[in-house]
Length: 140
Image (cartoon, rainbow, N blue to C red; front, side, top):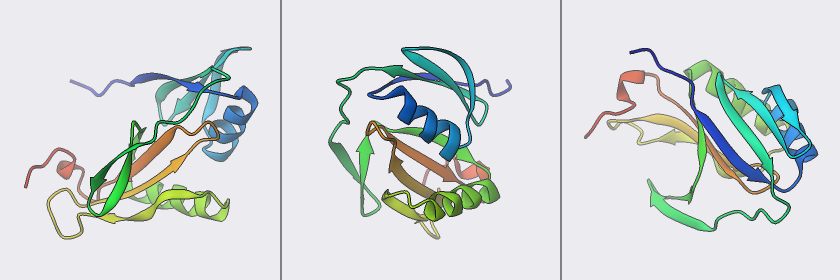
């Protein structure tokens, strides 16, 4: 079975801010759109920002490896070099990280590079990478 793109629709309080964040900062090509929504190509996956002027971020977190991981969140597993390039670009752009780029589970099963940050509407995103993609679903 080949991996198929996922689709995710999520609320944003400002379409222009979403375009700047996803389109300009993250480099996601824009697809179809209307005044109330816009499609983005997030590394081959279809995400859709839908206007909800009352959108508010969730405030729940779960402890993972000494960090408070925001719930819900979404993102993509990138290649190792692509993850580092994105981390460098976001750092240079002054993005405020909820969890700064680092290596989680260092020396353990599932070791991964990870970072968390929020879009202008407060949606939490996580981007991660594995030097060994075979560790993606590995159990200790």
